[in-house]
Image 1 (cartoon, rainbow, N blue to C red):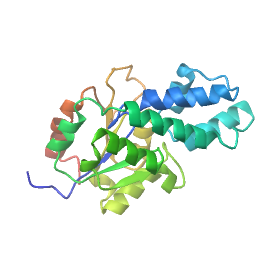
Image 2 (cartoon, one colour):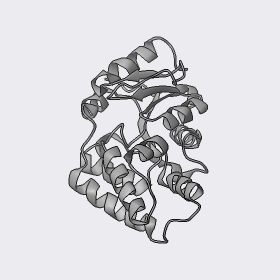
Image 3 (tube, rainbow, N blue to C red):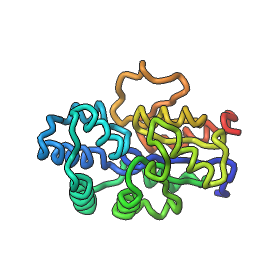
Amino acid sequence: MKKNNNILLIFDCDGVLVDSEPIANRIFIQCLQKEGFEVDEAYAYRHFHGISNRDCISHIESTFKRKVSDNFIETLLLLTDEEIKNTLQPISHIKEALAALSYPKCVASGSEPEKIKLSLEVTGLNEYFTHVYSSLQVNAGKPSPDVFLHAAKEMGFTPHQCVVIEDSNPGVQAALNAGMKVLLYRPILEDQSDLPKEVTVFDDMAHLPTMIHKIIQKGHLQ
């Protein structure tokens, strides 16, 4: 299929391309608990889902009125990388979806650039992406639109030419703030009453190519 260079697909990484959310949450919680912060899985999902480690740590330090240790981030990244290398898997059906979508693609994630690249390499998804962008490259992480706007500019597209595939509310808000079309992947469908009407929710990556083609056919992108 010939590439359509008038459309850019922007993928979040964690929870969209790779099943890393359980790994990241577990290790982050363990590191926090080791330093005496009373944080459990429910708290982490409520406050940390879809935002960068930088912003998670800022939240912790603001909420608990004390700082993490000097080697906290180094320990967190080392433990996370080790677990990624040993256990990380791609999201179900994402490889088939990416192979079927012959449009320009990039990754724009809140994770560190090294972690994104490692995750793509371990899962074999790096063959689909030559351009990777991180919230650490811009002033503010999601729900700020900065990383998506940066990715679009670097790739040579306007916001109205972009479709963002996300799995978190902060990511959805970032895409909407950027003026982009957004699809929300939720493998376990939850209450959608809090979502803006512009957001389309789906629960299986096997449906993604059809959804993208429908968006294009309806002329929702310029």
